[in-house]
Length: 514
Ligand SMILES: [Zn+2]
Image 1 (cartoon, rainbow, N blue to C red):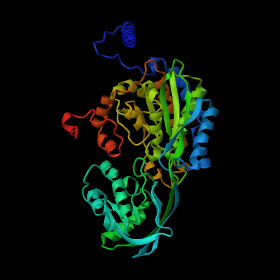
Image 2 (image 1 turned 90 degrees about the horizontal axis):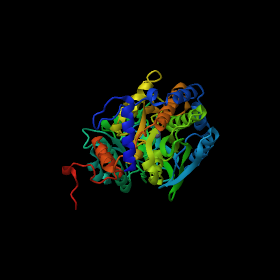
Image 3 (image 1 turned 90 degrees about the vertical axis):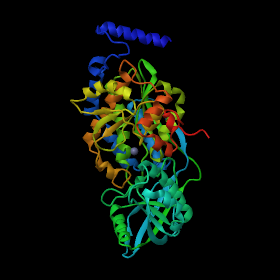
Image 4 (image 1 turned 180 degrees about the horizontal axis):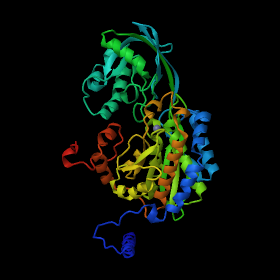
């Protein structure tokens, strides 16, 4: 009640100052940096960010000196120590790790394949993450196709795959929504594993590899592991196999894949450091990227770039000498590649603090220039954010929308009713570099990273420093409705991430109660 009254007084005061009478329910126009007093600080931060940037240096160290860092591995722990040291050295406050466990650890071993007939040569493959092994020494068999667009039938007929290698293709019309088919891939892999399939060839998201002679590793679900060996194959090799099959020739192939799982959960940790707020230190805006990566290269663009942008942004703000009204909490998440485990763990560990959160800001779309801010379903914030976005037009034009990004550490915040803000990037090469052997420092242009880190610093500081609080969590029902309206319900449900039951559903769509 006191809060309500205080708000009324603020509105009344604003009315007096502007002298413009507002109709009931009408909000005063949102202010940008030119009107809300944040501009002088932003000018200093932009100067540090653009002319004195350390972001590329951070990225070089993380890429070359640490390299690939699979969650729970020795190298990933090394990256945690490195992140801690960087945060301390730049002068962040309250620097620490927040430990949690993921369900199992996994280590890549060999992945070798060969076509034996009708021609004979090596096939280029790499194991998908958290998948199993062939018998020691490998196994050979006939290659058969499996149609991803009809997994219902393929799962029923999985017994035919015994002693065969299965190549997942897409034929005809999909039987259901693409994300649902990807979710069903897990059921198929289990059925194929039980049937005694030697190995399965399927790329990320069920697709074919992109790029010249590249494989793309990755996880095949949220928190998902499979005992059957699953490999990504280069488009060139896979194309040849498909052409043989189309001509009615069943190639004989040999596969030898060895990976190891841990027996139980493994420990990992998010790395956290803060710039405490000068007026409302208890109110928190999270800024981050993910520290973990895959292991076929250095993990530069996925997501060394986001890690370096986050640290570069923090460093620019610290060196500018500016302290925001509210706390900026910089978080390098781990476990992103296994199902956003780090950001889900964060939401769990900070449950009691969430009402004081303003959202999170994530950069995880590789090496390209930022072209927009997606406000994670919060249509109420577009008008609030737009004047800030407009203020960047001389430096770097950006678009603003309220789209939900489900593929990175924005999602757990969005599910919690907070704006999980995604920095959208113009990043065509990412298709080739992410999760592949090409994910190395060569892929990131230094000036682009400098710009991205500066934009991150400016957006983060402005959100935390503007006089009015940027956002508060939406109630569950409003969030559930929004997530349904943005067509994420099916996908979240399929991956067991939908926490809302019938909330937000139209009456006709509610599940029967028995
Ligand atoms: Zn990523």
